[in-house]
Image (cartoon, rainbow, N blue to C red):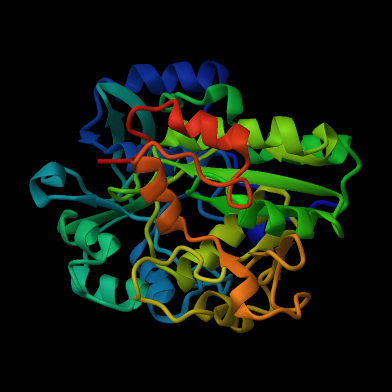
Length: 382
């Protein structure tokens, strides 16, 4: 059986048919709040059940419980606040009980019933979520630019935000049907914001050896400068899957969600989201969702001990490297040879090679993947 949705029920806040048409008409008379691409993605993720059990942007009680205890007010595990930020003048004439329309690129995306408008402390948020207020941390820098008030309340989606990778996007309702149709009882999910190298492939295939299927779910959306562009990640993974995976063993789907670089907290958040897609297992990176040296080497593994009730099994696969003596990708648990035989696959070194238009060696990256990446004049976010 695929996993039960987080909180026990897959949320569906998508307006359809005549009720959708009525909301679209009524929205023309509602107060408007302009939202960013990342917030539009959050609205869609709430409505389609990606963020189950959330039905809208967080009210103050849930927000404070998540910050302090990494749980919702009903004690369900949740580690990253999902919030809508506004400036006071944007909601000057709005009171709890009102309905507002959320606008993205001049298109009405959703109707929101406002339940609360409340202030928040951006430094407190940064300290709790990122464990730092250092502005060199990209999540902290982004947080400090957010607006001064938060609006909480349920949303009803009336238009999906545009998705450039629509052909590669599946919602939780769809993945759950697909996993069931394939007869998969155990599904290992893999989160990524990078192009795949042989270390990633090793970890994925290690997980696949003892589960029925692999769910590769790269994150597309806001990322810091120097990370790979969305289209490069998608094309690189399509090349890898086409050439090196049995077709019936993998489901590939993009997830429109911004990176927060919140390390341990974000690792748990990523697991919860994949649980809602139906995954039973989640591959946790050694420095999952980390950046720089803000988090300890295995901190993203340790945090899972705090959530015995998470409902998805974390998989801690050791970091892989190429051993010249073994003649392949291995890890410390299975390779007896010394460091002089080991070649670590460094993401930084790979990026430097690619910036020089240099093809990485085959013990680091599959040639088909490298070719796809090098076809892009600039594969990195600026």
